[in-house]
Amino acid sequence: MTFRSALFALIQICATALSVAVLVRPALPDDKDDSKSRDSEERRAAARLIQADLPRWKVTMGESAAELKLNPNSILRWTNPAAGRMNGEIFLWTADGRPEAVMSLYKVWEPDWGFAGELHSLSLSKLVAERDKTVIWKCDKPGITPRDVPDAPTVAETAPRRLQQMRAMAQDFSAVLIDFRNNSKGEVQSLRLLTQPVHRYASPGSDVVDGALYAFVVGTDVEVFLLLEAHGAKDAPHWQYAFARLNSDELAASFKDKEVWRVGKARFEDRDGPYVFISLPEAAK
Image (cartoon, rainbow, N blue to C red; front, side, top):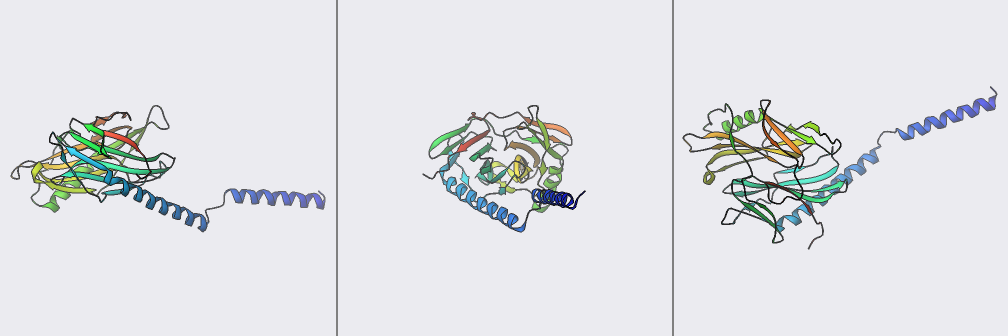
């Protein structure tokens, strides 16, 4: 090989190595800073959008159409990096301290799905939701089906001990999501239980001595809520559980590996069931 040929070959090798290095270079500090800045701005923008939308909502309960109380402070702020770039918050409507409806408002930046909301009735009574004084959801049937917790302990007398009991019972439940986005037959995903309740309450008017909402999540995005409540007279309360969805795909839950709850894929056009999904406009009125 001549010197010129050797030099030319060396130049080609160096150029190839440089190209590979450019392609596989690690993220530089500036890249990470840009990503953090984008994430921070998107989080703030989503929060502004959500706070602007909250006053537009009204939820009533029962035949008397008693207005539920909306807590303007979210019980959870969430993201779901596995599904895309999105920011959401979850809110509760209550009556006498008991949550009767839950709503998640969120903005999806990537994919560009826009602004949306999901609601689920946690009530045994009729619910009606209005946005900008227009009825957009009616649920005439109970939103949940309470059942006794199998082999539940006697309800403890103190709040700290009852919390310990609820934590232990929650660990006996599990939940899965059957995701149809990338597989027409459905991909089963095990959901992660947040060990701390996202909300705790009592409601003497609803005969609830103690209660908590536990969340099964992807990232911090709630897909299924588990309600645990100590019901009944104070001298003989008993533990009950119920589930509520915050995802339109098929979902299932088990107690000690025995299935106790399943819901099929929701239809986006339905406006009269316990769960509803709504695409929302972003422009302020």
